[in-house]
Length: 371
Ligand code: SAM
Ligand code: SF4
Image 1 (cartoon, rainbow, N blue to C red):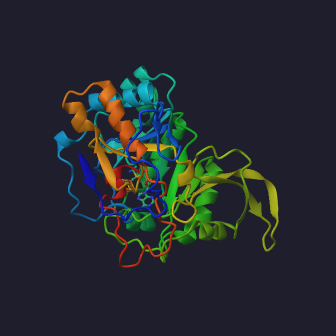
Image 2: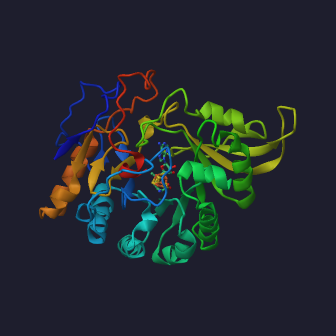
Image 3: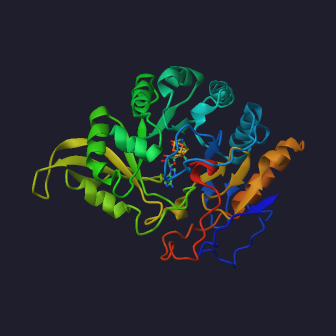
């Protein structure tokens, strides 16, 4: 079944390229524009214990019914098809908040048993992670990404609408201690709320050996409060950081990574010069203003088993429904390939006018897609 979402067609799609996947399209998750998806983002749940303003509403979001969400066995089967039949080479577990799933350790244990060499990472808000980090590592989790937008209790609580900063900081340290490194931190800057904190957040991360990445806010909040004018752009982020640091492009190849990485040195006060050694790196994910769609390698599965070829896809393909109807691996793989074939060429957000009245934001918020 195909569900239409309320997005305008990305402007750059080429109508001359066939929409139906040809028989000779080749193996794996290829699309009409020659990209190959090898990086799978799988959402374990739509539920969350925070209410970040750029993602979820304060209240009133309808949850998926329990029976609509993929079971552990279904997740394990879908990942096996992705890896064994379709060339998936990397898995990221996300949500909603993956830690709220009671069977998380069991899921990771099974995934690791089936795929001994597969990098399996998880994006989490780290609430409750301190208690679980060691068992996640023992189950076979490779690495962790933690969302952390502020180190100030009041700002954290304003942004997430929950007073859990201490738990998050304990979770980050526990992940590091458990060997779930390199720990990457994700921060979304909101104008007038935590943007001024960018340099101190970076200094804190560098001091602990964590890799901080700033993410441009995308129009994926359930409150539909995003505006182009109000978002903090990658250029602004670089400028905010330049008060304290000198950033130089990381010589390592980007290799399809969404973050543009920079080496970071301390600035000599009042001069354009850097001083001392490289302190670490910082990443900037400029999804809106400097998009990386042409090199996108992601395929997404929502918590209810829908395939999304892009965060801003207009269509979703129901993989779980097909699986529950008794379909074999080959049929499931084919549906996945068909869904990915029509991946949009670009999300179109970098074009002007997104906050104009005719811009229609996707129906799903980030928590309901799986970021
Ligand atoms: N709950 C987990 C967490 O927060 O890390 C995993 C799911 S969350 C949807 C995944 C990532 O999406 C987080 O790093 C979060 O900051 C990011 N995110 C959520 N809404 C966003 C938005 N509107 N724009 C940009 N990033 C967003
Ligand atoms: Fe929850 Fe993550 Fe969304 Fe925040 S960003 S509300 S932690 S799903």
